Length: 83
Length: 441
Image (cartoon, rainbow over all chains, first blue to last red; front, side, top):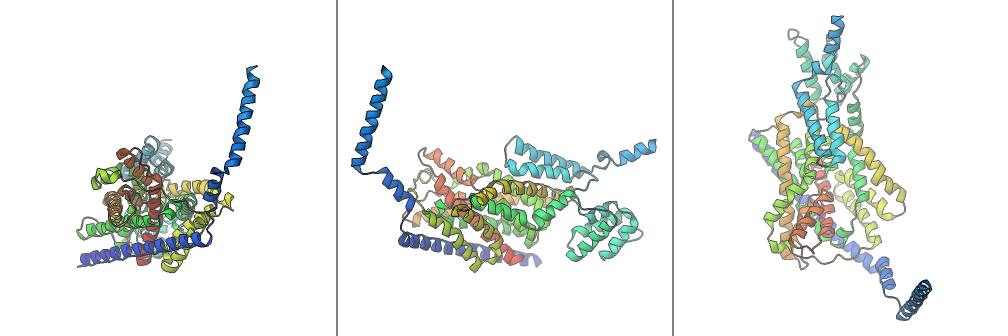
């Protein structure tokens, strides 16, 4: 008698608890997705990726200049050290 | 001369050592061995094991309150006084030893705090004092502080990036919490069958082991079933250390080789603003839906906000390192103080250890099954192996997912993908803890 009552309470707590955990995390998924979308739309910086992207692909002209300068420097350095 | 020698002998540990205490000292040494030689969660098992040895030193009473010490050592007159305070009847014919037993049993039973305080005051008036470990326990765990401070540190160490990049992994963290509730039902069932004698509160505290989250299970059991705290904490930390042994067989049994080889799409980068807003939105949800989880998740969000805001580097650093280390020491010793022979050596402890293992296994299985379910529904491929990381145990469970994934496909790195469900599991078990406390506390 008392045992079945304990079991029933256990079952009730299981249903309630598991249900609540799922509801709460579902709401959290929705809120998080909305939050990410809102931030993506209204603060569209993502500053870090844009900045690194820009740095990775600099204007081709400047790139060439830098390459020339580095090549010249390396060349001169090797030349000087060979003597 | 012989009389003096005899006094020395009667006061020695060897004379007073009971069999239970000897066994518990061995248990403590066993925990130390696991921690030092096998590297099982050494940060916790070293303090817990050592605390367990200290708590079982005969006659020292390090883990006992003043009243409990008085019950063991006091003169009969004081015992009578204490019994009167506690509203106990002492049988005059039974003798002093029986009186001591009655009084100490009463002190361990369900006493109102007011009566307990009165008994303690009476004992202190006669020169008895609280033991050192008892003091640690009341400051660190009975007050609920230590697990919460540790949760703040965990928050400050957690990177929600993978979770924010793929929020649906939160479902995996939710599914793995089924282990908690299935174990609760198991514990209740064992009592119904008459094998064990667990109340609903105790069953709930045991179930939380399945959350695989040490601080959460200590917090919950300190509220719902402080008498089982020692066994629950030991079970919970030992199984966390055993994650790499328990999980892989279950993971392999439930997935096919093709499923294990699924490659997941690269996670999108997450902006700093999103990471700052996330703990705040989680906090608001807790405020709106489950204020009972507020202590745990509130501290967690606070720690995470300190980390992500980037303006309180010093506080975040202290929380992650110095503070969490200090608190861990006292938490471990306090848990050790609950390994007193009379309380720990019971059939219930074996039941708790067995149920804890089941809880872990069910949680792991449910996470994987949920991932398989999501895989059939969603367009984005999900490797079922990351489902097992839904039982918290950060970051061990995620590492296990990664390792098992690499065994099937050496180029498939699942670690970052598994971190999502892993931190979701922390949130999930804190929510489950909140529900339990709301329902039973």
